[in-house]
Image (cartoon, rainbow, N blue to C red; front, side):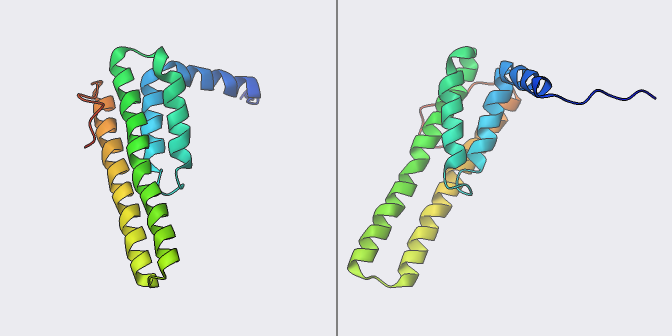
Length: 141
């Protein structure tokens, strides 16, 4: 039995480069990052946005529709987050009771979660079947 050579940093870098060459996998990764947007307070969405902006020029036209869809999902999903910040500020200044704050904030978080998850699942479906997004500029799923 022969011993395997240890994995080096160069091996990992080459594997990562090979992964980034497959534009379909990169778009798939972005949808996975968008799924965790609410749970990571938008950090994974920022990463997905950066990847979509940098990888957009490297793919065929049908992949570019996915990147456009992902960028719009980020920008449309950030709206409820900003709205919740405004609501929280308003409520704090006017002394409204705690249950109202909790209900409104939870509702906005659930709205954002449903919206981003719905769009990410739709994107997963289209990318798995090698189809472009029919209308990447739509507001709805």
